[in-house]
Image (cartoon, rainbow, N blue to C red; front, side, top):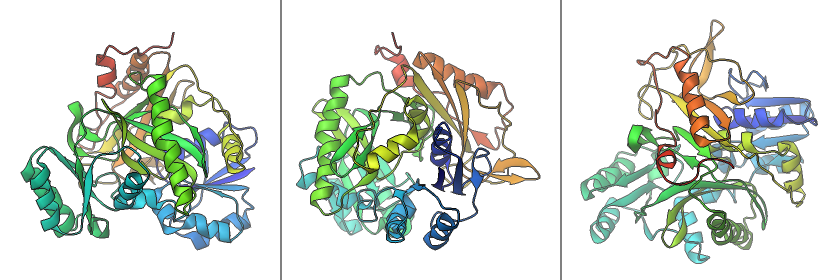
Length: 427
C-alpha cells in the first residue's frame, strides 16, 4: 500500500517510522514532511492545501491518508478528502472542534458530566479579571483557540493572571485564538496524556504518557509544545487508567456522537491525577507531540493494520512491549519565544535497535541539516527500566557536540517518576 502522511513535524516522522514497520506498506509519502524524514518520499505540498493534497493522492493512487497536525483538521481537510471519495484517517472539522475551541470542550464536558476543572468562558478582559478576583490565585488562563501548545498560563498570582489576560486579549498574542479566554480552577496533581484510537463510540486506548511542557529544568519557564516525554507512567495503576477510560474517553466519544460530531481518529485527553479521580485539562483531536514519539515505539501492533481495523469498527487488539520509552527534545535557543533558524543540527548516530532520532524543525543547507523551527528533533530510547531509557537518551546527547548558543534541552525528563517510590521497572 502507498500511504500519505500529512504534516511535517516530529509526530509525523514518528508515524512514518511506525508505518514502515508494516509488511503491507510499500511507500510512505509525507506532505510537506521535513528533510530529516529520510525514510519517506517528501512531497512539497503544505498541510493546509487540501486541493493539491487531494490531487496528489489521486495521481499517486494513495490507499490511505493519515492527517497529523491540528490546523488542517480544523480547516476541514478530512471533510475534503471524504467528499473526494478518498480514504482518510482523522476527525472531521466538526469533530475536531473539541481541540479547536477550549470553550466548546468545557461546555461539552459540563453537559455530559465529564470530570474537569470549574471554569468561566470570558469574552472581555473585564469579565476575565473579575473572575480571577472572585476565585483568587493560583488560577489558569487559556486562549480559546489553537496556540501551538503555548496559549496556557498557570498563574500563581493575580498579577500574573492579569498579564496573561492582557497578553491574549489586548495584545492579541495568539491572534483570533484569543478572542475569548477560558479561566479555570487550578488543579494540583500529576499530569498525564491518554490517547485512544476512536471510531464513533468505539474507543481503543493506548498506554498513558507524561509530557513535560515547561521549557526549563525543574518545570520552570514558559509553556512549550513539549520538551520531552516518557511512557508508560509508573505512578498510574491499571485501575486508575481504567477509571480515566470509563469516565473520560468513552463518555467523550459518546457525547460527540450525540452532538452530531462523531469522531474518527485519535482522541487525546490531557488529564490530571487528583484525589477526586482523573480530570481533563484539555482535549486534542490528534496524536500528541511529543507523546506519539514515545508511545508508538512501544506498540507491538502493525500501525497500518490498527488504523484499518479502527476505520471499519473492528477491535485492533492493541498490545504493548514490556518496556519504557523516553524522549528528549532538542530545541532552538529562545524557544518558545523568538529564535534563530539555520543553525547546523548536531549529527546524531544512526537509529539503532533501542535508540532513535525523530526530526521536526529542520531544513537543509548544502547537504547539511539545519534548524528550521523551535523544536528541532527528539532523541528517544527504549529499555526495561525507565531509568535506563532516560540514561540512554542522555548518553546519546553527551556523545555529540551541541552548540549551546544555538540549542538547549532539558536535563531532567522523567525526574518526578525517577525520584518517586513508584516502580519504574518491568519485572
